Structures are given as C-alpha cells and as structure tokens.
Image 1 (cartoon, rainbow, N blue to C red):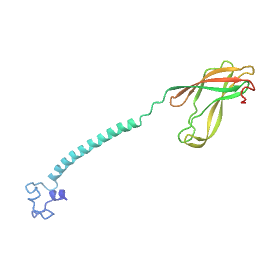
Image 2: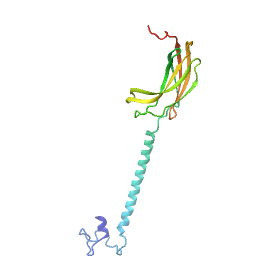
Image 3: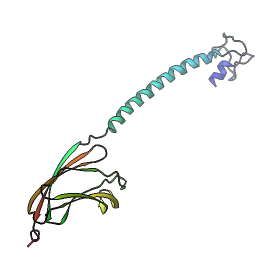
Image 4: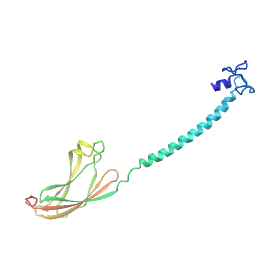
Length: 195
C-alpha cells in the first residue's frame, strides 16, 4: 500500500489513505503521466541492496555447506593391498576348498566377481578355480542370499605328504587387492581323524 500511496496521489491533494500529499513526501515531486514513479527508483535501490546481501549470505551458506558435505562424503581410503595368511588341511589326491570369492553389495545383490591370479603356484599340488552359486543366510545385513562365486580348490598328488604353499592375488572392483598366502597341510588317509 505504501508504493501505491507514493506513486498515485489523488488529484484533490489527498492520497488514498486520506492523508494530504504533504504527508507522503511527494507533494513537491511532479512527473508526467506514463513516466515511472520516483518511489519505484528508491524501492528498486533498496531492493537491489537487500537482494545483494541475501545472495551473498546464500552463497556463503552454499559454499560452507558444500565444503562440509564434501568433507563428510569424502570416501574413506580403501587399503590398496592387504595380505592374509592362513592354513588349510587337505588329504592327498582329493580336492580341498581353499577359498570362496564373491562380491555382495549392501542391497544383498551380487556385484562384479573379483579377478583371481595365481602368483606363486604350489610346489607339489595343483590349484583350480570353479564357478558356483553361493547360498547363505545371515551374512552381514542379508538374511538369505544366493549369489555367483568363484571357489578355489587344491589337489595334492597321491604320494605327497607334508606342507605345500601357494599365493593367490584377488582384485576387487574399486582397486582393493588381497594377497592370500595359503599353506596347505597335506596328510594321509588317516591323518585328519580326531581321537
């Protein structure tokens, strides 16, 4: 209402609120019909200054917010390579599972399977990798799932008894690499019986 009263005073010397034109500060100003009201220039200048202050404040908030979000969302560094050492018991001339390799995503679906490479082959036996479907329950947040997997098997010759060693490199998507140093303890037919 202020802008209307400032720009359109009545012919009779009173504005629309009933006050005289002297009170609204524009009694001395004259402008031709169809020209822009001087109060609009004052309002536009105040509006422009106000908008600059608001825009600067918004820009500062966005800048600090993006810096905070970037630091909060900064990915935690994944160790590029980890080494795992373990032992497996096996019987001569029988396939023994030495590892199962799968990739389960947070939504309990399968991700891309890792790449498996035999870095150091065993001295006596032989290693093979087969594809399989892994079925499990209560794995992390997954109550039940079935996903494709790779399964590594070791097989010693019938006459071999003792320790054999092999090294497998497992590369997952995203750059994570795991070196597995596996010692296989091969025994004869009665070597694994518990008394």
